[in-house]
Structure formats: structure tokens, C-alpha cells
Figure (spheres, one colour):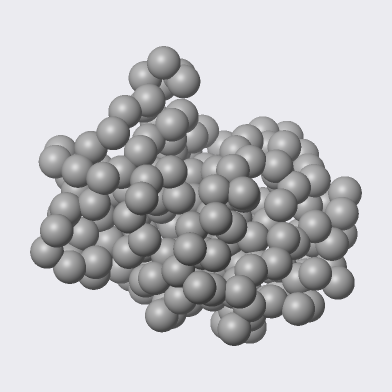
Length: 190
């Protein structure tokens, strides 16, 4: 099984390093021919508008959407979660492309600016008993999950920060920026 990491913009190298550390074969996806060689795909954090435009520029938007509809596991972290969301709370900026595969609403920059970034330990039942250190950087929130969406993690106040819809996974935080491999292992088991 080869794990693709969308490598157009954002922190794709950190995902790649984490997967290589746990022995998972990886491939940086920059073109449709790369996508054809992978069994799963991670869409990293970065800037969702820029990533969306690059998906169109490099001919990847429709092929990723089609593979996602056919059941390929896709995990979006931070900006990737925004791209997976069917809806944006503030509305999509004019011309912003998106995959729109998951029945969720994403609220962009829900915690404020870069200076408002933070870390918090979260209990995530799907990952076991030990809390997971989570890193939020200009992070979105997940709202209005549809009936097929399973909420995986919430903050203490109940706001949703991780969700799963079958083979689709969205996290508002960055597991690749910690030393904890559990979320990557969870994705490999989807």
C-alpha cells in the first residue's frame, strides 16, 4: 500500500517523515500520474485557497474527487479538512475550488490568527486511552456533521476538531507536527 501526500503546498514533508518512520511507503503527489500510483491520500495543512487553485492548475481536482467518491481513503489536515468539506461557514471565496466530499461544514480560521495558535491534549477514543497532543495553527472547526459523519474529537467546550465519514478523515489539528504516530496509523487502517 502506497500513501500519497499531496505535495503542492503546505507541510507535506512532515507527513512524509511520519509515515516513513512507521514504515509506510509514500509518494509525493504533484500530478495525476502520481495519484494513479497511490492507494490513499493525505491533503496537508497549508493555505486552502492556494492548494485548491494548485489542484486545478495541475489537473488533480477532478481525479482526487473521483477517487474519493470511489472509496479511496483521503485524510485532510487543517487546510485539507477545509478542502474536503462540502460547505464553508463563511461561504467559499469566489472561484475557490474544493473537493467537497465530506458532509461537514468547515469554519476557516476559527481560532484567530497565527499568533493564536495553541496545543492541547485531547482524549480520542479511536486512538486509545492516552491523550493525544494536538497542534492548532490558524485552524478550522468542523460544524454541522451529516448523519453519516462520526465525530472523533472535540475540544472541552464541545467544538468538533476531528471527524470521519467512512473512508474520509478530517482533522483541524496537525498530528504530523508531534511525535505521536497514532493518527497516521489510524488512517492506514481505514
